[in-house]
Image (cartoon, rainbow over all chains, first blue to last red; front, side, top):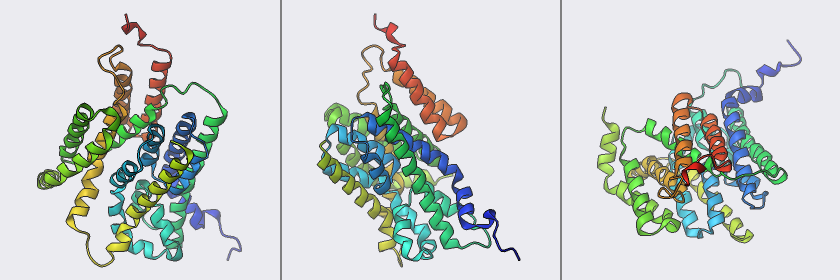
Length: 237
Length: 113
C-alpha cells in the first residue's frame, strides 16, 4: 500500500479537470467585467464585491449601466428578478444532490449559476471519491475563477490607462451571444418577437432613457397572455 | 449614482439573485411548483434578453452618418463567429476588439461628407 496518494486520485484534482472549460470563460468574463466597471470611473472595489456577492454574470454587466444612468432601485429589483428567474427552476433538479452537501448547502444554492448548474446536472460522478466534496469544490472553483478574473480586470482597468472607447460593446456582444444560444434552444420564436416589439414600442412611446422597465413588464404580461401558443409552439416536433 | 446607492443596489441584486436560486429549496421540497412559475422561469429570460440587446443599441443613431454601421459590423462579427465557433470568449472579445478599432480610428468617417 502506498503511503502517499497520487494527486490524480484526489477530489480537488477531479474538480479542477471538470471545471476546466468553465475556468477559461469565467476568468475572461470576469476580466471583461472588472475592466469595464473600472473604466467607467466607478470605484474598482465594487467589481470584486459584486462578483463575490451578486455572482450573476449578465446581471453584473447590466448593473454597470444602472449605476451610470442612476436607475431607480425598484427598476433594479424587478429586472434582477426577471433576468434571474430562470434560476428558480435550476434547484428543482438538484434537490437531492444538494442534500448531500450538509452545512454548505446554502453556499451551493448561492453559487448556482448557469454554468455550475449545467456542470452539476450533467457530470458523471467519478468513482472512489467523496461526492459531496466533489460538488462543493466544483461550485467553489467556479466562484473563484469569476472573482479572480474580476480582480484582475478591475486592477488592469484601474492601473493601465488606455482608450476604452467602444469597450461597452462587450455588453451588447454578451447579450447577443446569450440570445443566439436561446434562439438555438427554443423552438418557439414568440418570446423573441414579443420582447423585440415591446422594446421598440417603448423606445418610441416612452423614450429610450426609460424604456427598460415598461418593456420588460409588458413583455412578461404578453408572454402570460400567449402562454398556450408559446408552450404549444415550443413542444411541437 | 453615488456610493451609497451603488451599495444598496448591490445588496438588492445579491438578495434577489439568492432568493431566486433558493426558491425551489424553500418551497418545493414535496410538491411541484405552479405551472405559471415554471412557464415564466422558462420563457421570460428569452424575451428579457431580446429587450436587453435592443436596450444596448438604444443610443445608436441609424439616421445620421455612419448610420449605425459600426454597430452593424460588430454585430455581424458576433453572429458569424458565434455560429462558426460557438465559443463565448471568441465571439465577445473579437467583436468588441473590432468595434473598438472601428470607433477609435474612425474608420467609417468617410461616410460623413
